[in-house]
Image (cartoon, rainbow, N blue to C red):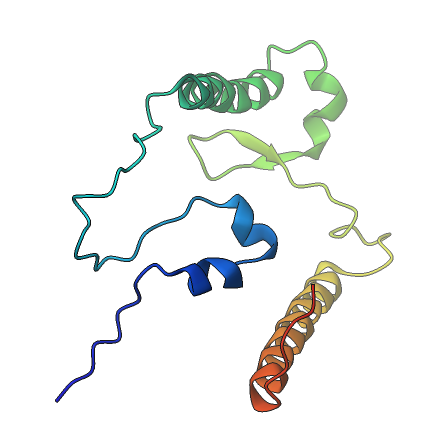
Length: 145
């Protein structure tokens, strides 16, 4: 006979939450026999805070597109100063700036070397996290706060 493994909200579970999880919104378990009886907070999508976020998003994203397009046009007064650095782009026939110290011959390290080192750093960091979790599980170590 299968066992019911669903979690229910309990005081013990609330006490286990520590650190940054105390700052997050408490999401009840999907199984809750008295779900309708509990009082749930209103959704926050239409609060002034989220209206502010929507407004910032709707203003900032078009500006982030418009400014580079305007600055890279041939009618801009500074265009002759950087025209030689522009190459044919892949989007709508626009030119793009591909000059980068990592791509130049004078660069200290080639781009592949820097990218390889960053990738290796990510893999080592990920490995350290995995080793930490495995060690904690293997030796039943509890975190101290």
